[in-house]
Image (cartoon, rainbow, N blue to C red; front, side, top):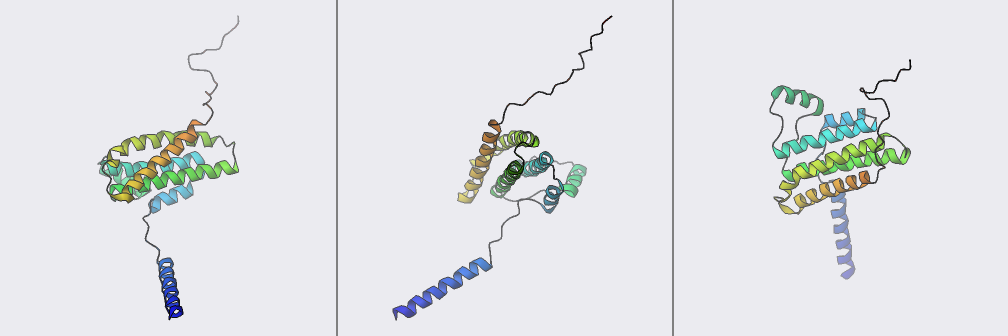
Length: 190
């Protein structure tokens, strides 16, 4: 009797496991199909990071209610970037956290192949500045987070932004470009 119960229990567990793996949970896409295409088409690191930044900023605009009311601009943007994303504050923040994570991964990938790539510091500094700004914009919504999933989304966003800022803080200081200013005139000898 014990053996038969064990076999039935194991069979039931196997059935549950196979059903769970056969039907994975639907996961929200954090990028629109147009944004995905823009990322694929943009191979230069700093330009690709700008696509991630624009995608993240679009979600923050929706979250804060500051989306562009200009219908012409909205139509132009939606043709290039896709419709403005919708969702709960938790979903939008989760999207932004995942976008920042993907941007981090892109920078890490380039760094692992070409550590001295001059676009890495440029992209990282720009991403750090925007990530800090985004955290400041969404902080008021974090206090209103409902449930552990939403709170976790805010925590992940803040963690990603802090990781970006930490990496950017370890970059060497920016070197000013050498060149003559407009006011400098070459000296002439007579």
